Image: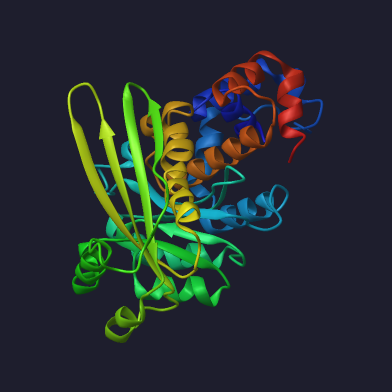
Length: 336
């Protein structure tokens, strides 16, 4: 609890946790029994290094049940590297954390750790097993566009929107040729235009359910539609265009397809960006034993608490207010 409160107030390291406890002792004693006194920074370090990550992950899932009884809307699955978590002395690579982000709830629904990016394919099925997918649309990047993952999502009662690239070889080529052919049976939504940070972006969504020919050749689990998103970005210096192709297990409108594809980027903009910029995760230097994994889960818990607090201020301001005001901090942890 002391460690969680420290992160909610902007602390990062085990030294910060010990300092926070010393400065906030009177506040902490209002709801904690500190019969042995305040823990030192070495104690915090030993606890997080020794704590079994699987047990802590289960605690996180129980904790999440208080915020979201069931998943809703779009669930984005993506991985993130904790850059400073490598340990040269023991030849230990940086921790790679794969997370499930509830785009509508703006909450981390679950996470699982891997050693490398390549192991993300084996980690995603384990992460999906932790979630209730009924009525949800799961989005993943092209790396995880795999038959096994598609089958598992459908078997768990969910739908998918899988980014499709060259890792699926001839299937990608077949989808691309069909959707790029003006003579094909397609539905195209009106372009969506966004302007921000000196950049103008236009997104056009196209979808087709005429995929019987594709299923005859490839037999993709649960496939009901294919689609593409054309993104054109204009800046003062240049204009670029990219096209992304998708496999879908649900027959949705072209407009909704565009919203689902766009929602996947929330895992980058609202989760990974916040972890790095607001909670400074990329600079976290915890390297030994289970420390990096457990502290990453702790930051996810803190981020969920911040997002669940519905005042219309940024998470950065919430962190400052928590550090300045014991009352505001108490309101945050009262949500648990």
